[in-house]
Length: 206
Image (tube, rainbow, N blue to C red; front, side):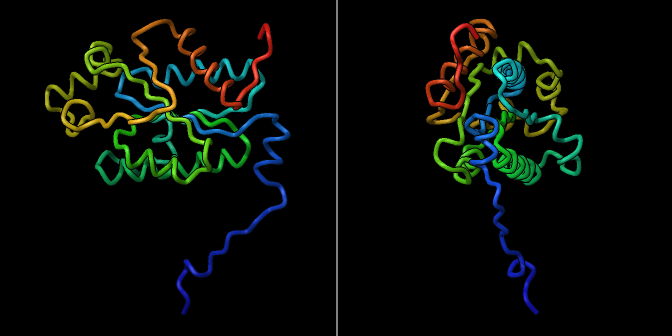
């Protein structure tokens, strides 16, 4: 009896990423926002997506909390479950990339090897790592969900930045500290980078 893996064959379709991207007139890309809880990842990604929509770009935003309502609702917060959470998100991002989209992913994703694994599964230039480098003190001051308070009280185990490590990117494409400057300035920094590397085109006056 053959194993299930040997019976699975990749089926190539005539409509591919290039065709879908050509229809949308954009360069499919995964923008991966990583940083501590409360650093402003989702806020920045959401504001950037709104601006990209104004530029007629086709996008989708995958957010750390939102995917746990459906795609990853069966996972908890053990090390193994967190790794599986990111693996699933990486696979979904690849499918959306193949659909010709600009995919914005906002996840703490504390371990370099997990982020690097997602990058390694994509072609060169298709993964843009955005380090939302807001420091721990500022994130803890904001504490929008009260998680830092709970972590300090011992109510949450293995909380990133408190009782579990965060490994910042070594060579991210973009670094943004949301405690410095306005959200408009930060979105413009992102747009300038995306325009420079050919992901989007911003005409004069847009």
